[in-house]
Length: 431
Image 1: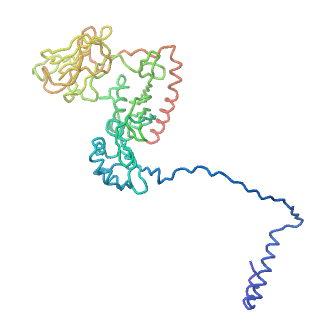
Image 2: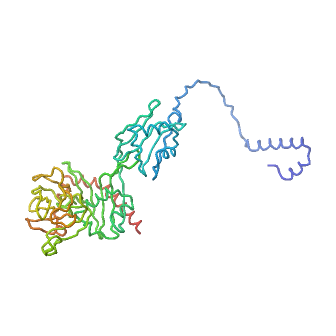
Image 3: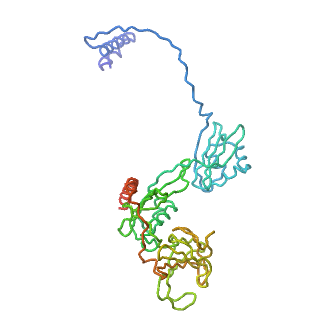
């Protein structure tokens, strides 16, 4: 940079003299910053080499491959509006979707679901992918100058999901708050049904954490699988459950110490209902209008609600009796038996002498016999004497065999760590 005094004087110099001074200053600057004292420059020999190189194969252009785009279906969307939002400009494809029977399933647009299409640079549709209700994938591909549609069984990826939430009003409200699928919520209640009465025992600020399988197709959640590990804190008491498949192929849910969480009997044969009449030695019979003992529990539920066997056993009675209406009785191991009355119908293929497993549907809620409304009358008997199924101590199923306990402990350790992490997140969020 020139000093200000030089620049001021230079304004009065002729143009040629100014240019000469500027050139000399530039040479001085280069000399000052280009070389340092005692610097020696070596002469480096150079040689020119010319080679012919083979060009690498170039990838196809994006215009030839097309462009994949994805868009979520909005409420009120038409297929034409959705495709336009995706950048498609293909009236011939729209006519094909409308007229071809295999492609017409595309019109079953469900808000929130994703539609993926591949188009060329002109907006012509090259391919389309859409997950249909039921899990099949509709695939449309361009073959020559036309389109071909088919339904495929998609490739499914299974991922583990972790959810945790406190309860503010109900189990389903807490589950909905963290996006837990209803199917997993029902499993959660079933897993802990032997220890927790989900009709009466839930309290505000109870907590749950659950690790479960979720199946995905093209990044879209399809449906939920089984719970692998879960924790439920009820009234300050923590219950944990882990899925374990033994060497015999049977599986079940067990505590961290290998104790089976499955009771020999479920507390309730009907999922999520309300009790209209409990076990009592004296009550006014709603049908007969007389005072008599009610040695069972009545569960109110809509007609057609599935009724489950509360324990493994054998059907010893299936038919119709005057007061009970359509009734099923099951004999379990030892002195235990159960009875299910007022059914609207029986499960298909259920016969006297047939074996049933715990949780298996044996019939459906109805209003047959002496019933004033749709409900299930359930009796739990010990040595053929009715006992209160809501208060009696229920026996446990067998624990993890001793020779498999080490393998079980090692397998559930990572799940236990995940539940601990979820519990910490839930507590932090709740506070």
